[in-house]
Image (cartoon, rainbow over all chains, first blue to last red):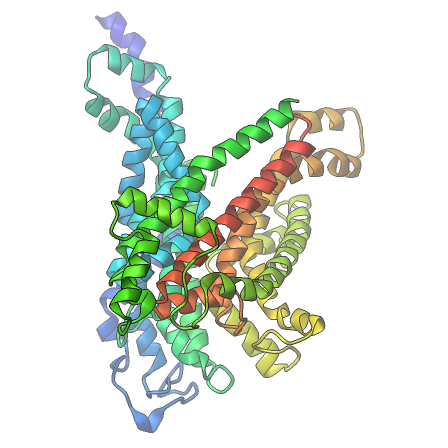
Length: 287
Length: 311
């Protein structure tokens, strides 16, 4: 008995066998930036100096001033206040948009990789088809059928953007399937469901989690461009892509209406990219 | 001989994908809101005209027969008519592909050249100041919305500096080229981050490969190793990436053509969605997908013939 514990001791006390949380600076910067964005979204009403949808015909297309830090648009709405309120839409769009693709992709990837055989080849052909379509073309075609709007954008994403998750998870599962500890679990008579949820998934999910950050960036970029074309968020809800559209006509005379919301998109995207890079480094995933 | 076999296999693999794509396009026509006959003929069509159209598209037949009718019509070049333009979809597409082709070529040049230069410099000067700059550039660049980038370039080069036209496509070849400079720059700035990131990672990986270390230990000059061993071996994976690059450039063109008022397929696509011109949307969905397929296929073929390892 004591001999056994002696033998096991180095294994138990070896810290490297546990996941080490050595957080990289990139992760910290990314996380703090995202935290700031979340605070802006929550306290938008308190932070914004003006009502974002209140029009003021006396103050239209005004340049930057102490009264309007980032100027006003054609209806006299304060650009700064609109950007602050737009955070709510654009931030939540990025996060909500990746949830269902993430779940669907992981389920498909695990089933495909774990069971292999006919199911795998069928699902892989499905992947080929989904990949053959340029992503944006498929999303736009689905929007054309469903009609404009944020909910329909989420539906389109659920149909289309699970593909990379499925590929990432499947690749991991294919390797895991042949490892000894999965064999051991199988020999011990655990059910497939138990093996998948307790042993396969926790070891296969890391690259997918890292990809979530890139996907959030893509979702925000595509979602805002849909709103830019009037196919996403509908007026008067403040949204950055829509703001850029509204300023397009006045790009020569009142550039601030379009340029500042774009900078907001770049900064929000950057926050998630930094977190993604940090996580990739930390979890040793090749992005 | 082996290569021919691989080639044949690659073509055979396309068949299920093509069938899948056609099924998706067919389903899109089925689930589009409204009665297709009314959509095509308009609300005031006579009962006879409606009946004739139903017969032509097999609309009273079971779904499978309808699908076969759909494929037959597609292959015969009958892609339906546009509601907004009062002309056939195929006609519209044929008239509008040139600007998109210009943009594709311009976009390819302006993405690949800077990516090569930046990727090589950054990997040679790893962790030096210039490498840090390149890395900052591509981290920010990944989050640039291309439509906003287009507007920003219009603001700088057309409005403020007045050196380049903001919108339109011109009438002569020279005019076309002048008009696609800004859109191509937009594509280049949007694409370069993705490409540089990949190229830099591959170059750095190959710099530490066994065959490079072997050459280094034999005392072969570092410059020579880079030119003869590192670079060629890194370019191959990048060529593989080209297929995806074409697809990406196509996607960016769709978004920026309306901004630069370039009368190409992208603008047509966006307008057809906004104007609910379903048949145009579906036709273009097919065209874009086929272009994407051809792009990936030709890249596969190129690698097949230049990579000596494939046997």
